[in-house]
Length: 366
Ligand SMILES: *Cc1c(COP(=O)(O)O)cnc(C)c1O
Image (cartoon, rainbow, N blue to C red; front, side, top):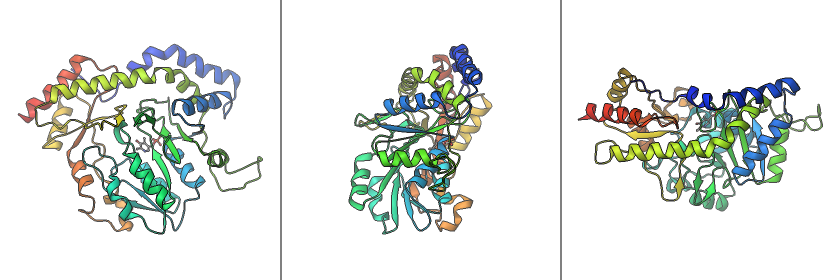
């Protein structure tokens, strides 16, 4: 049997005609930048995120970059974040000229540990950027409390967690701004790159809106130095077709996750911990195992797709050496990086496939 980590063809087959018609509509209109599809999609993402405003972005990365730039974060500033995340979180902070300050994770949730944040705050700190990793939101209440006390912005990197909740509140709606990615492997994936920023702050919304178009308002009059951070209408049109399926797809991922949990219970495999405060959308189903690298090799030999998110925490990446961190500084992130494996959890996964994955892991570790 072959079990891919993700099977986008299976999903596409169910919506192909509608996607082709929607894309064709954009092409026929030749509104190839901005336009009504982008505006409609922004409105719908704001609504499902319980936010007043949304601004499309060319990618999740550019959503984060635009948020930081629109909050005037740059040289001399510090942003507190987790080292156990995708590169983009940290890369964007550095590209503004600001300095990322790392705080280790809670080993249960893999998300930033709020108890460690306050001691990282300095007079240079401007923002906290929690990352809602794998589909589960970070512990937001203590983060917001610290942010209020020290007058900091909170930018939620919700790239993996659209519609996920924390105490019944939606990802992106708790912080100053929330950033989503529509990279094809996310729960709501486009047919190329795309992203979105949501916020309840009207002033920030206006700034984000201007910044995404080189900071110009009116056209050719540049108030700020922005960029080309625009969401493509072809992406918006395809995403509008997929959006009504999102909850159903996330529910199927949760069912797959619950099924894996049951099959792994009582074994050496550590299954994901989901806080009672949270509903995860399981963008990834991530287990911890002993002899991780051997397990990964074994799975690949058996045609089972899997991935390590992420093998090297940001503080140990070569390009961030100048920040001065060393091995041992973020023990929980470093340990997680050596133990985690993401298994196939996509909605179309069959019971036979899940059985095959579980059997491959358990027979190897026996
Ligand atoms: C996917 C992702 C991003 C970047 O999104 P792109 O759309 O690929 O630019 C940022 N942060 C996290 C945590 C992600 O998973």
